[in-house]
Image 1 (spheres, rainbow, N blue to C red):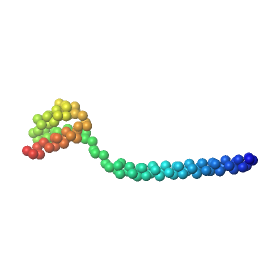
Image 2: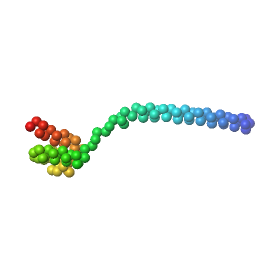
Image 3: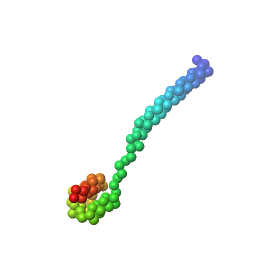
Image 4: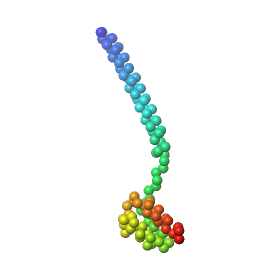
Length: 106
């Protein structure tokens, strides 16, 4: 083979490789754009708000002012602490739920 025919063959191989790489890139782009479109509703779902110590303290203080101080102490013990600061933040939601029902049936 002459140099020009070898060069012509190399150019054809490069163009073929470039076309293949381009097809793969397009396929990957479609896959990821479809995946992110599928994930969008999940990401769009608002996360449940996390209760802060101050918010829990406000709820418990209101119930205590309403005369449920002993019940509040019992709830704190139920969740493993003598004081609110000793409660695991993972239990705040359940603690508030228990506190909110105090006085509803009385």
